[in-house]
Image (cartoon, rainbow, N blue to C red; front, side):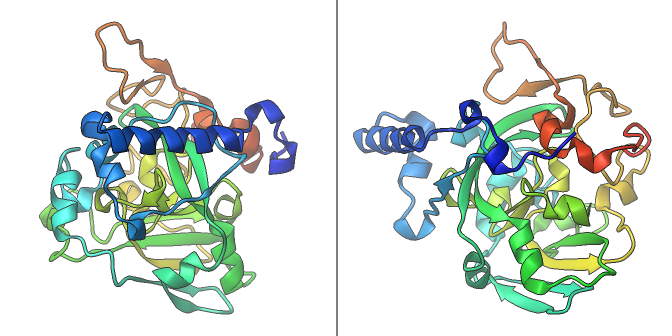
Length: 317
């Protein structure tokens, strides 16, 4: 199966720019009129310095985006606690996303420490609406703002020994009260195979819904890999390291019988404690709302399945 490049995507799958512009206009107008309710003001009242608009991408899904309030108030970020309500409560109080720098090192010809401002100059940011599927069997649709991770990879020139990319999250007890927990070994680490990291869908992400990343969603930058479970998308990055051997990610180290390195969304491979065959979409919690069937590779199989040709995806979960 071939990986589709943007030029190969059917016109029917591309979100017209006028639709996105119209949607933003409606949101802004509603906010000005005070009719957005509890979900709107947090977005509408952001100062200009917090906005991060990106040109709509043809790689976006056509699905309706999940409400901003749900995405920012129900999320995982164990550095601030294990409950979904902990990150929105504690991250804005403690996390300081400026100043911030990221060290890129390892098997590269041009290792370098990047400030956020330097990273934002590497490539134009886009708005990409991706499905998000979390391992706990809930999902959302999020308009992320960023650019392909491949742009950063190109800038540091990996050597021929670079087979994997390892990501490390900030681990500062003063900023992250969740580090007192022994649920994981800190700092939080994740990894991708080099071809996964270079794939056009893999996003170096600075924002969502047209604004900079909220603290609880991984400020000031994170990775988004839409065909994998959400925990693969490391937040609040401080180090990117290119290595020859496959790194051990934090959840794999903590519970290897439950979490593997690849963690591709797969409805046929259940978590030991629950089924992955269906999912609950945030915002669809009504009495008569049906659970959605989980899509293999989270619906991105046509683009990424070739990466795993010949692999046993039940064994390499």
